[in-house]
Length: 288
Image (cartoon, rainbow, N blue to C red):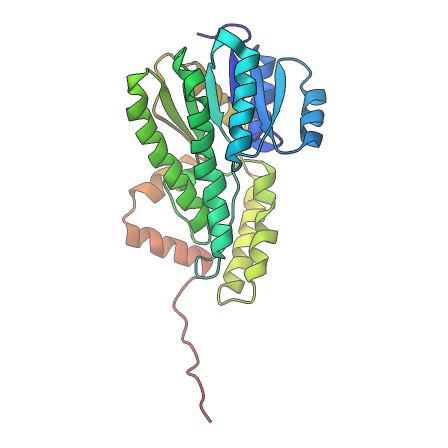
C-alpha cells in the first residue's frame, strides 16, 4: 500500500511518540510533516531528521496558525494530497478533580480535544482527494479512568467519541478514522507526573498522591518502549483493512482486560486497596 514519499502530517513531534513516529516513518520513505511550537524545535528536528522531514510551526490551540500551516502544506504537496493525518499532540494535566483549576481543565480539553478537531477540519480538503486516513492517538485512559487522571481521561474519552463520529461521518468520502490507545510509554510525559501532582500535597489527597507518584516512578522503569507504539501506528497506517481501534496496553491482563471486565464497584475496591483510599473519620469541628 505504501509508495515512496507519501505525505503524512504528525502533530506534536518535538518529543515522545510523535518524535519516534516521525523518525520511523521518515526512515521508511514517507515524507513527514511534523508540527512543533518553537523555531528552536523545528531547527533541532530538521538536523536530527535530515531527509523526508519538514517541520511546520504551529500550536494546535491556535486556529489561525493551524489553518495557515495547513495552507502552506497544501502548497508544498500540490496535487499529491495528504496520505494520512496522525493527531498526536497532547498534554496530561493530573490532579484531583475537587481541586484542579478550571483553567487547567480547559487547557487539557483545548489541546487534546479542540486542537485535534481544529487540525482535522483544516486537513479534510487534503484528505478527501486521495482519500487519506486519520489516526488519532488516544490512550488506555480513553476507556479506563484512574483517580487523579480525570481531566486527562475526560479528554481521551472525548477523543474516542470524536473518532467514532468521524469514522461514521467520513464514510461519505472513504476516509478511515482510527484510534491507537497506548498504555504507559517511556516518554517525557510520564516523568512529569510527580512534579505536577505535588502542588496538591496540602489537600486531603496529599498522602495518596505521594504514594501514587512513587508507583508511577516505579512503573516508569517498566514502561513500554516507544517503538512498540510506533509499530502499531505503522500498522494502522498501512493496513488495507484497518481495525477501528488498536489498544497497546503495558500489560494486557491488569492494564486492559481486568479493568474493563470487572464490575465498577469491584474495580473501585481494587483501586482503593492499591492506593489506600478509604473514607476517613474526620475530626468534628470544635466551636468556642
